[in-house]
Length: 273
Image 1 (tube, rainbow, N blue to C red):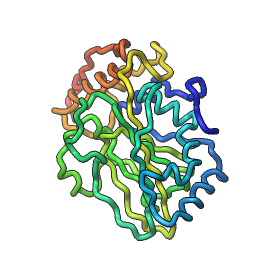
Image 2 (image 1 turned 30 degrees about the vertical axis):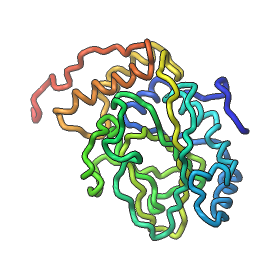
Image 3 (image 1 turned 120 degrees about the vertical axis):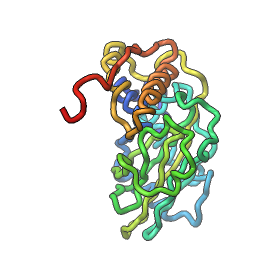
Image 4 (image 1 turned 180 degrees about the vertical axis):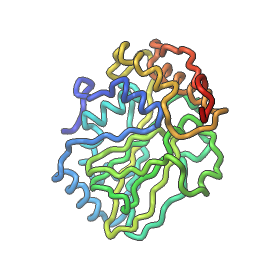
């Protein structure tokens, strides 16, 4: 397997796309198999040094990861069918005893010029081995892609309520909106943890849905898109979060606007009654 044509791609459905809009990430489990993943792991172990952007040339089998129908379909669903692989990629080698990273955005906080309701780029992180909770899994804060101007002071904080620790099976690819705050956690195990990070970009603005769109299924997702719980936000930001989710859908769907009805989430009995 060296490529995935448009017809081969396994696209996201409406519910899965709404999950991505709300949380800013999705985990794709491939069927590459133990032999393939072990082969990549062994080649990584044999590298004399980190090849940096040259990791794809050092281990050409990685092409099969990012052309896998599920991975290619997820990328096409989020970035459009004409998405492309950016020239920067990196192999992260998390050795036993490696401390945790600080929370960060790869481009640096506040450096994005795009609107927070657009999806211009995603990180795609491949793990060639099972990642347990003590092996330095990637941590991320869902929903932070909707507020990319978050202060740099987040980098100095520790744990966050509702943070996600990505313990994954070998062969999994964690696809993350470029503006989601994330960090590598400490590896307190006796095992090395590899993660191969690639960056994929949008090539053109959407004119129609690039996922497995169904109007009835999409309409059924309206309450989740507007009221679904992602990372906790203050009441003052709840309206902005909802509006940015809807705007993100509309930007991804092109000329298929999401049905935007007013949902009064504060109506009902007073708290405590």
